[in-house]
Length: 275
Image (tube, rainbow, N blue to C red; front, side, top):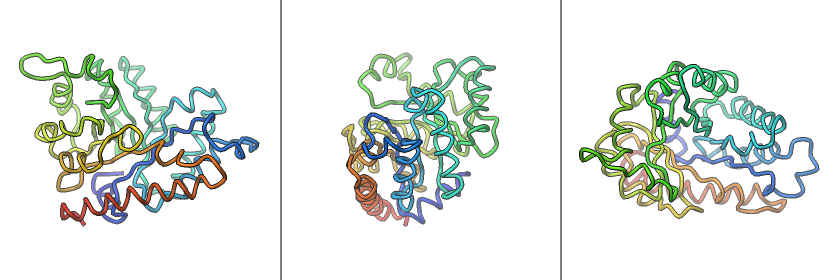
């Protein structure tokens, strides 16, 4: 999926919502556990309930890998289901990979070729040769971790040298490897006030913004400081949507929560003159 196609989805759906499929088998509704693949059935129901307003789905790979082969099969089936039934929706492998070059090549092949995700989150700490293997796939995206929403972000990401914080150096240096057509950045919603400065460094790139909802991030603040003329935002909500209800009514409640966010996003897009 290219930049234009992603922006067209945002305008068509009046939304920049990403639904995070952090599908913890310990939290999904009990009535699904008797099925052959409860996680896939859960994901399928969530996807069908939210596809009208979601522009992206983001499985967090840890929730699948932790279950071994069974989890990997659930992931394969989930991605295949999205590709078959909702081929215009952007898929993100939230895998946070990054290693020496030949290892990164295999990670890239696993997620961008074998599983055929549209994009993958990548940790940039090991530098250029750990990231560029992911950029070799035409039409695919790398989403670099820049400024995260967790408490530990302050351990390293704000380290300053020569007047530049480490996360700012990541933003600056990585633009030598890719551009706004194949690279995005993760910026946590709980750091929304810093988006203004980030936009000065990367005015055109898409930002994947987790942390809205259950983690306390403000959608209004994210839009105020982070939205550009092409929206430039993919805002993720996971627990607030997929675990809004744990009864047989879970998909209906997920749909309601997704639509609430979409309505807020529509208002923000209208205020910016994008739609």
